[in-house]
Image (cartoon, rainbow, N blue to C red; front, side, top):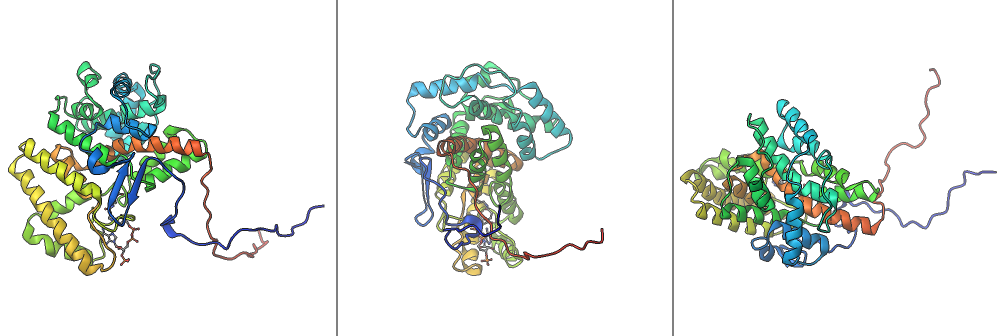
Length: 395
Ligand code: ACO
């Protein structure tokens, strides 16, 4: 005989954590985000030490293996990526269809990513695994091919020049068809390294939730791309640059920013869930942008924009302190992302897809850790509502 007697439970009284703020999910060897002191450690290295010196391929291996790779390991990964530097036919068709419908580059990247493993590839020489390698090698190509297709240009075909370059170099090459300068490659490596990983941010959490159900890596990366696309996460750098452009001159900074804040708008590129001081990545990217603008001898218009951004940053912080006292809203990574990627000649709507290219290496490392942990992620909700409604029997 069955009874409906309540099951005795030893569960503690539930406690709500809106936005899961302050909740720790697991231990990790990937990165440590210290929001009070404004420090970020990636694979044991402070971001200021690692990002401007390492190549992105080295950082991808560091995150995945927990130690800095030796030159042979890096060479093996580069070779694996070079051998996958072509897009499957189906991926080109998806991108062409997306371009015809004028989808955003981030939508196109999300759609095409599921098809990037649809090709038989050589056996990997490095430890990253076939799906991870296919995504790392081809997401940059997909971003570049889509940018060309929507401008009515043909994608740059896979060729020896593209294969001989690093991931950062090949991304720039496949966008323009021209071999990029060392300064531009260095700047993009610094950017990709800076954004490669950042604790349990929304997109990384999404990737972990998906693989915790034992779904595959491609599903996790596609889900993470969706989470990254929102303006409160990876979608901010384009609007941050638009804001600087809208302000247009230092004299207008205070009036425009004040009006926005008084109207309840958020300033893109400011504020962070964890950092209550300046995001350390903002400093790394501001230095890298200043170096790029100097070394590439960018024109007066770009240099003026850079100077204006500095004024906007200072004014924004002053006004956020005045109008949002006690919230400690400071510059985040997205503000200088915008200036660095603009200095590389990239259109604003490519900023988030390129962020995704960098963050993919972080997602891959987290997916691996989550698979080791093996625990299904399944938090609870506290139900608030009726419990004893009845339906009318008239139907
Ligand atoms: N401009 C104006 N006000 C802000 C901003 C901002 N950029 N950020 C937060 N606030 C205010 C909120 O309006 C809120 O004010 P209230 O207390 O008067 O209601 C208060 O600060 C707290 O905001 P929350 O949304 O609760 O803070 P949370 O930690 O959830 O937000 C977030 C973090 C989403 C990044 C927020 O600061 C924001 O929207 N920033 C702008 C978007 C942005 O730059 N995103 C990129 C983040 S970096 C990354 O993801 C890679």
